[in-house]
Image: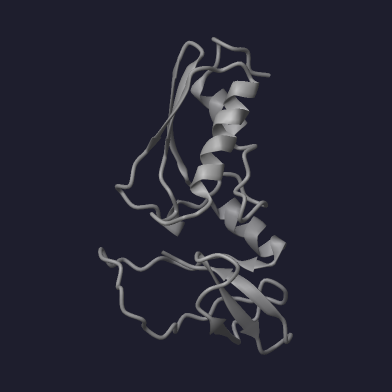
Length: 169
């Protein structure tokens, strides 16, 4: 239980770990790596966040839910700072988050490329993601975009299941 005015940074992170991503409700904003830092000054809290990408439509909802979760615990004022550098990467997702994605039926992202710039040209996807249902790597990308821009649609040739895959960026 967090009491207003006596919160620690760890307590704030525990509260934020209850805030789920609206597009991937099996993961919290902390597990996704969106929450970069927390500063506490009495009951005032500043949360630093980095969007998964600059056009993520879920960020407004995430900001509102972060604010609501903290204010519901008596913390106020709540200030959100959005930082874009360094850019978010799937490498910031915890191993536990990637396991939760697979258990939820979404193939977790593989290792992000080391390139410093994001290519704006379309290139064939060569990495085969493991099927979250049977683990086979005999998969293929059927669509570069899934239900959200951060996911693709893949198909497993072994168990014949279509599935979403979280893109590695």
